[in-house]
Amino acid sequence: PSRIFSGIKPTGHLTLGNYLGALRRWAREDQYAAESLFCVVDLHALTVEHDPARVRRLSRQAAGLLLAAGLDPEVCTVFVQSHVDEHARLSYLLECVASDGEMRRMIQYKEKSARAQRGGQGVRLSLLTYPVLMAADILAYRATEVPVGEDQAQHVELTRDLAVRFNQRYGHVFAVPKATLPAVAARVMDLQDPATKMGKSHDATAGIVYLLDEPEAVARKVRRAVTDSEPGVSYDREARPGVANLLEILATCTGKEPEVLAASYEGIGALKADTAEAVVELLRPVRERHAEISADPSYVDGVLRAGAARARELARPTVDAAYAAIGLLPPA
Ligand code: ATP
Ligand code: MG
Image 1 (cartoon, rainbow, N blue to C red):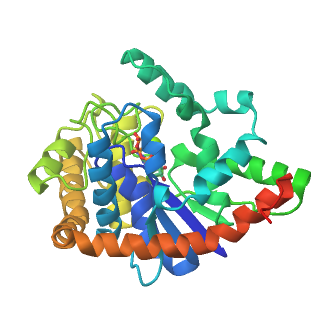
Image 2: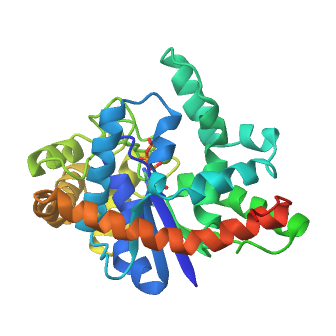
């Protein structure tokens, strides 16, 4: 890849799903593979009911967790979306190449708008247009790879479509990106409801492991995971989603295949105990480093300031080129 971009929304405390689907790979592989940018996409957090002070707090916390997970500001660019105006500028142009029907087909829009309505809240227009802003996040940097969890694959697909369409209509401005998904645990499920993706903005927290949970809480949540009443352990995502979820989580911690792990357990109890221990050990260093990092908020702020400057430098020429290509008169 020549450039990598990915982001995370400050809509809640980061989860094990965010870590396994995204952060861990960003830190271990992606940042070393190419020029790469990792963004706290705060504008996206405004698409659903939000508390201003909480979004601000979660934004700094998310940035601290990216660093705690191992992103090295000497190696990659870590920044906050709203610090770089180019995202919003480009988003409007992309709204002019996207269609209303395309937006309404997005699975996340259907899910999140239904949830907002169930909660008695209106559906914000920005929830509908959110994938266009996400496309702008990616295309502004001419990113070629977008490391995300499976739930974001459809949005990256849309981003490709918009890039191709824009390039065909107005001339070649954007690189056409592709999503890269983790081999296992691309979709970590809620431990209490294995039919639902673990999501940091969800209200029911008993089935969600947060990166900053105390080790005892992590272990308890894993040990109490909902599975099924079949005897023994086998790996079958369709028929046994709860057990499969544990096997995949353990697989990412141990580097073994879920099928191989399944064959090595006789009962669910032992699988849960080992998975609980593995997740506690997986998250321990992240939690410890986060405590060190957040002791000095000015460190995180400095990283974000430098990151935004670098991001602006990269995005500006591409977004200016898009403005010119689409027919806007350049300022004299
Ligand atoms: P929200 O509930 O607000 O949508 P989220 O937990 O889904 O929050 P996002 O900010 O939407 O988190 O996504 C950040 C990254 O984490 C994306 O790459 C996404 O694909 C990934 N991700 C989110 N949840 C999971 C999950 N359960 N399993 C694997 N990857 C996930
Ligand atoms: Mg999400």
